[in-house]
Image (cartoon, rainbow, N blue to C red; front, side):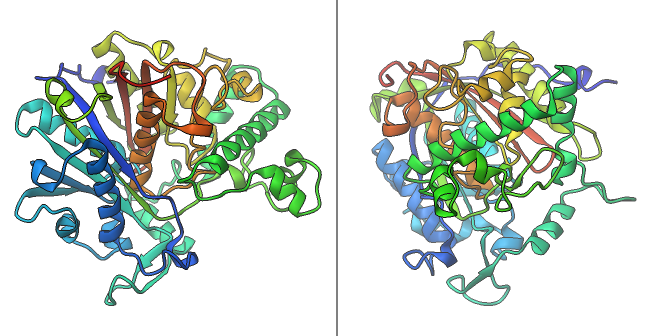
Length: 436
């Protein structure tokens, strides 16, 4: 049986569901920031949730149920039932809640789960949020305000815990030199030279960092030209090929890998027929495709992306070419280009040219990742998926300021990936009340 033969057909929602509020904390490194040092999971989750409530014009008493997401509560926070630790921050004592964890796909599952509750008719107003602090993790037995650095050796153990290891330890989907297998396949299939791939990856980094530096929630406020001048170099390209940005794979350099940080984000959904009661700029969720392909499958990211996209394309009748904006999990930067092509947002075999020519930058004609992505904007595990959603919703409203995309956004696609196996593809529709 092939992967395609095993993909179920998505069924329409029992009732339409729309996003009425979004919220997010800045991405920070709590232990490195004197203004944030001492903050805990409850405070960060509460910040994002209250931000979403304010955006939707609701309070805890208006919300029927909330969902808590965290990629690694046992590793990062020593939590068992992590949702219990944040309820009091939301004004939701006694109300139902649950916790879910799908590693870096958690933020995308956060929306899927909330939408499912509302679409089924079980609840009318649901809040779903994610918090992660992989840079500033808790001690096993100390209070949460006292934290320690999350090291790469700790992170490796966590990655290994997501790998099927009954008889072996296979990390093809994790390590940079293995994650490049899709890129390697791409450039050979499309007869792209290694030199052009290097130029493409360099330009992607420059444009993503440019967007991230302009974003008030991003981890960094300097672009690569600033860094080049700081170290006595003339251009960003020179800096990106210097000892400060070494190769960590065949094509990938240090700047093409995620920047781990701390943060939270949240979303509130309700039936579309009720959305006007709360806001005049709701965003409808048209459908969410979901595919899981285990670690021991080569090019699992490509296969699962194809499967999830096929599901939502068949459900809605829309393709990636109909979309006006594309966001994706990109803890490997090449995923921006590869996923955008796989989902037909960019023409087959031409994605590298769009990236090289700047057409996929936030101010280009086919924008991808206008907040800068995980490699430049920051990556807080589960929270990053909802930061993608936060960015998408504000872009669709036309509220993104200096990084607002040029084109009117009627439809947006978000491709989520995480846990080494989960891929979700979400299609969003603008209510028409906001936007450019």
